[in-house]
Image (cartoon, rainbow, N blue to C red; front, side):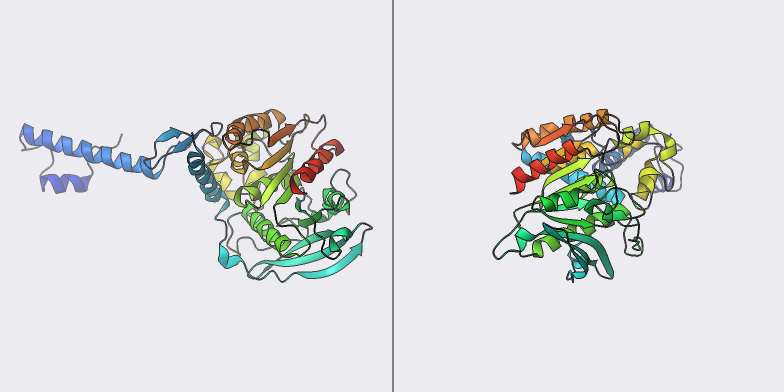
Amino acid sequence: MPMPFSRPLRRRLGGSRPVGRSLSGSRRAFLGVVAATVLASTRARGQQAAPVRLDRLNLMQYHDDRGTVRPVETRAHWERRRAEILRGMQQVMGPLPGRDRRVPLDVQVSDETDCGRYVRRAVTYASEPGARTPAWLLVPKSALAAGASAPAVLCLHPTDDTIGHDVVVGLGGRPNRAYAAELAERGFVALAPSYPLLAKYQPDVRGLGYASGTMKAIWDNVRGLDLLESLPYVRRSGFGAIGHSLGGHNAVYTAAFDQRLSVIVSSCGLDLYTDYYGGDPKVWQTEKGWCQLRYMPRLLDYANRLETIPFDFAEIIGTLAPRACFISAPLRDANFRWASVDRIVAAARPIYALLGAPTALSVAHPDSDHDFPEPMRQQAYALFDRRLR
């Protein structure tokens, strides 16, 4: 147990004599009251500086100015909780870059292919000083007509260390992954940036000042939205984001920080960190699971105390409200468990209700493994049609 007095406090209160010797009983009692008051004040200040971690599955709580837990009853209350969630994300991911990183995009096209209803362009853009992000830009020919415009979707690819973002434009030969090409066929402008530290895209994440590949990816995506906004044939009333697996959580992470994403689709992209592979400690090790540099190495600090991770997917999905969000969580997904996804959705629903959009969050459970089956993709595309056109 900590001693009630530190050594400097004893000297300050009692000179060179040890406290408790040669002092009257009343003097000792007085000093005891002083010490108790100092200790209580110190503890109170500590509680205000580092409030207890709120329940990850009860989003209807927030901390007031004193650090006291209060019920969320208004939008303003929720905004306080939302800000705390974003701070927790940046505590692990590293800070979201500021305006000083928004250099001119300097979009460069290295190749263009006629794909029938749309053209596919291989581009790079300046995401920040000294760094360029490779991407595919798919543009419907109908959008290129004079005076025309089309809605746009950010298409984020799954883990693929061989061809990376090629897979979502149909160049990977993998079924159920070419959602960028399918959206372009339907008349959407599709931007598919590469994810850092996969395939040919190998930026110096730490050299650029990032604590995680996750935050670098988020910033690349934010700059991708800047690119879409700069195109004369793209509608600017809101964008979509879609992704499978890695792309599934990449989409919701980005949407938490960028309100321009008004429709978010995540396939096989998430469950609670505390549920990930049943909490198996083997996946919470250096360069394993979520702790890899391309994800969030700082999560290694929480390996033996997952419940203290300062944010989780229920809270992140809550930050998306009242925007439309569709989650596909297959019944046989071995990576992310559907039952955990249901707990996430149940926790976020009260926030959607509070913000007047009780039906904007939806989840489906296809009878498949870690996949993005056609019925789920068609449901996603229909959502984009309703919300973005």
